[in-house]
Image (cartoon, rainbow, N blue to C red; front, side):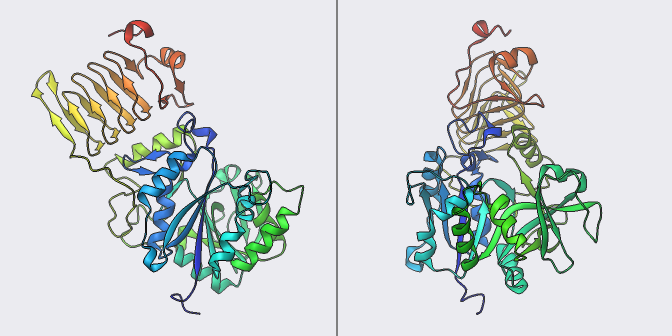
Length: 421
């Protein structure tokens, strides 16, 4: 079987609730959270599969999926003439009266999709991490190994092992043990200071995946999790291999600096830090790689506009990413990401911040070290990120002191909030 003749189905698990990203996930699923001005988190996983040449993809959704479904239907359309598709598949209770009881159960409840497509191999990817990956290279390694399942492993310092699912593997690459967040991890043979952390990306031979999820469904004690149950059980059977993503995966246009980049943005602070990396002089994650693009839907908006050029009223942005449809009208933007349709009015200061679509910052307002969700209006003179105690009284504040104003939240004017103008 040649690479061209292989039938590969991509399954993207996009039902995540994302509690640690609250309030950004209060009204949307985690994979639908906007990122980098123009994108949604799911765009990174889908772009990796598409760029790898895998063009038959189903996206399994569940939690507050409306905005995710809308984004997929608007953005991810491929030619039905060639049999290609990205299809959102909501929980349908096909096997009973239960919603998805875990990631493995999500696949079990949608075995009809596998039977209809009849693929030779299946890529099961998560939907909410930042990375670039050529899945076809992992596929080749999976086939060569003869394993039933291959797990993508990221090399991380051994000190971080308690934060990940950790893979122990022999010199031949076959996995000998898979443990969740171990405190006694053993380093790699070629570098004892590192361990393999599971990226949550898997390649399966189809028959093996079907058998595994059916067997898991029959186990009442199972939590029906892909990593904790499916992979663990296959490891015990000696049927899994590790794929060294850090060492072996190479994409067109990469540099030594961004090679092997992978980031979990599952907390507010990680999400904020990833944005601050984007606007640095030499970001680790390079959105400007034209050889491996990240695809998304871009509204038909005019270019960003900066107006007024007086000493006390100058529209300007420095060390920032400013998207289409933004108007900086006499305000100042520093070290920030400003998403489409946002407006910064005269005398306002946006500094070390992330503004999502349609945010409006009023005259003389200050927004510092904050994430402002879609269509939030910051009234004239309000100060955010200036007085920590006042911020905690009014808004959600992360462990690192990042203020988060959720979608639809009403920000009171200065007099009502007790802030000075």
